[in-house]
Length: 105
Length: 240
Picture 1 (cartoon, rainbow over the protein chains, first blue to last red):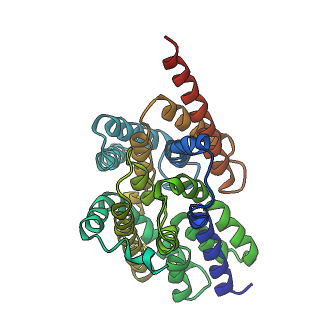
Picture 2: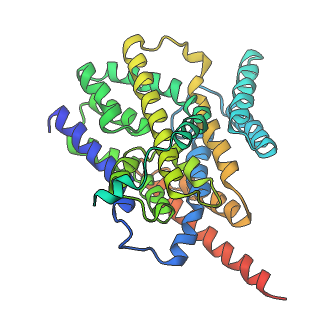
């Protein structure tokens, strides 16, 4: 498969994951129990992305020592919980990380 | 048919609010865009093909993996399969949003589906009570326009200037922090907490599987656990 064909088919595959249920339209309705259950997609998905990333198993920031990254994420999450602010979570987490780096942890 | 596109005329206030609501979540995508752009320069493909992944695939983590696989000389169909699995979580976003845009016209479903990425889903899912459909449509498109434009610029900067930001700053670490914050904000009750704990635990337990599988199964497990927990809670409430 050429580079361009690969990118285009990968793009179509990606589009189908996102548009899939939206394109079904209103003719198909999901059972009420499923609709209610789907309100838990956000906490399940964001935990499934955040927790492995915080532990370093997905490769982002792989050079950060585990103790520093876990402490930074834990403090950020605590702040997010108290303030309901994602920006505060990101700011506190990054400042914590930089502080720990500067003291050599 | 023509009725459908004219019944939701442009709502400037909703569009602008969509942009404003998106800005805090667009900031962390900038360092990540630089990384993806730099990865494109490392892959044995033209800069145009590298940048085109931002319009054609428009999904950061999947783009990064695709570019790394190109660099490793992986066969095209394997790259497509990897991209599909990493993006499979969007199937759950799409399912969750389906009933929240009931009555939306086809043109919106086509465009709205294209921009349904993590941060946009977080914002659109956060309303406990759904806004009027016209507001929803234009707010969604405002968010989408912001995230899309930001991503194009971020990846282009990474392509042009490479890794100009010192790696020791660890700026991409804002990505896990952002998702950690989104996780906390999306936990609105005890069943939500159950969904998060199960979703996170199952995803970690399955981290040995090829990329994307663990998260998809983790989300399904978390959603199921949340629904069961909700059933338990409402049973208790029903008991005098």
